[in-house]
Amino acid sequence: MAITIEIPTAFRRFTEGSPKVDSGATTVAEALNDLTAKFPALSRHVRDEQGQIRQFLNVYLNEEDIRFLNGESSPLKDGDRVLLVPSIAGG
Amino acid sequence: MKEIYFLRCRECGKKYPNQPQSYCEECFAPLEVSYDYEALRQTTSREAVSRRAFNMWRYSEFLPLPQGFTPSQPIGGTPLVKSRNLGSRLGVKNLYFKNDAVCFPSLSFKDRVVATALAAARRFGFETIGCSSTGNLANAVAAQGAQQGFDTCVFIPADLEPAKILNTAVYGARIVRINGNYDHVNRLCTQIADKFRWGLVNVNLRPYYAEGSKTHGYEIAEQLGWELPDNVVVPMAGGSLIGKIAKAFAELAHLGWVEPKQVKFFGAQATGCSPIADAVKRELPRFTPQKPNTIARSLAIGNPADGPFAVRLIRESGGWAEDISDPEIIDSIKLLAETEGIFAETAGGVTAGVAAKLIQQGRIGADETTVVCITGNGLKTTDAIAADFPLTEVIEPKLDAFEALLQEQLKDTVNADAR
Image (cartoon, rainbow over all chains, first blue to last red; front, side):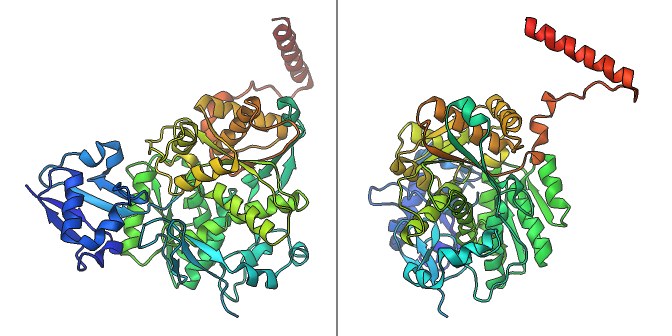
């Protein structure tokens, strides 16, 4: 089982420039934990002091915002893409 | 002369030099333009502003414009109309409509934000500009992009109102229609801005873009005789405008141009897309994103970028947020047109309808000064109300035919009265 975490440019200084990180995670939470375990400097940018995903960081599973799914407990299947998008702008 | 503005994170306060970037690299919160207000105080005065032509550029010192910037057209400077009929019908004395339905050149308040965004686009050397849009913004980007010679490419949800697509296409802009709602379009644009060197006005140029909205607020204060209103009712999509009107008022008060006042900010949304109003009404710590389903397409943003700030502002100002249904939106468009002669788009129906609801709820008082912000023109969303206005009977060009018609209509009126 393999999923891909896609890294926005703003995060790549913490991922040694890598735009994608592979993971064997089975939920979104595991994927995020896997990512921050690999790159500990990312931790405080992903989660706030209460351990919640930062309010202005949007996490998508394939095309869907995880808040429309089961949040961090959304299950992952082989080939899924977890997408991190900083501060959606627009409007 | 040194530039008196810079970027700052709205959450953690980290400062950044001027650059095309919309979010903080530490906490991902939006960046906003901040100013050295002491320097600003030295460069301008109320009297100097008052002598200039009445358009948004009279407030140039308050905007993040590059040095030597020369405006290419008069944008903003829209009427503040005192209610003659609707206010008394609702039982309030001092009701005003700030009417950006007649904003030049593309008939919505988005002309203001695009004006400051394109000044920044030029400064940062972008040749291609664009945006993610629910319609009005695309119209404004296409119009000003054409005039200023930019290569323009806009991204819209595929099922946007035909009039809004036409009002973009006519300027020669490239239009990319996306199979999805605005939030999908927006996410794609965030990725495009990350990869291409394009100036997307509401993505990587967003801090500069959003500042243009302040001119809507400055004009309100000036048109009230350099006074702040008690209440402002503002439509909310991404949640930016309401905050920028507050910022404009705060700046004027800080510089001593108006008496400081606790203005109550009221937010208006359509029930079919009301993440911000929902958070205010249910006192949620964070808003919950929604899948939009409303005729008020220009407000159909389910994941509003400035939602958290709008919620906070509304709470701290002592205001409130409300939402109305699609049939209520249509009724409100008609009511505003019939009572005040203002034809607003669906978002204007939302704002007028929510204002009426807030008055009925007693949240807006009878003796208070209230400004209702109308941000777009009804000619852009005629399909929303077309079914309510079937074509009338055709008569021959003869006087007796007209008199017969009058008789017929009189009979209908009498019958209606009798019922």
